[in-house]
Length: 78
Image (cartoon, rainbow, N blue to C red):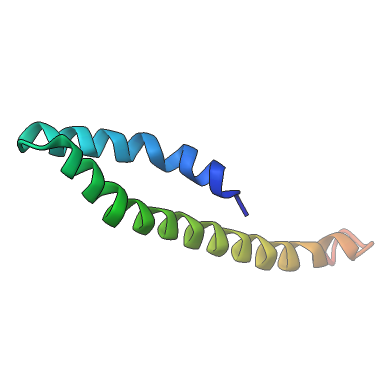
């Protein structure tokens, strides 16, 4: 799994961009950044972690299916 710092490195630029967009529409950019970092960043991090977890589970399943074909010596049986 990606470390917390790696996930933040992926998420933080997007969060800053969103905060900039929100801050440009309202009067208080600090409040917008606080809202984004407090509400949205944790959801994005959870989504990324869930995606990584499902990706790894899919890889394990695919490896189990494909690995059986490599064990068989006879090419016709593969």
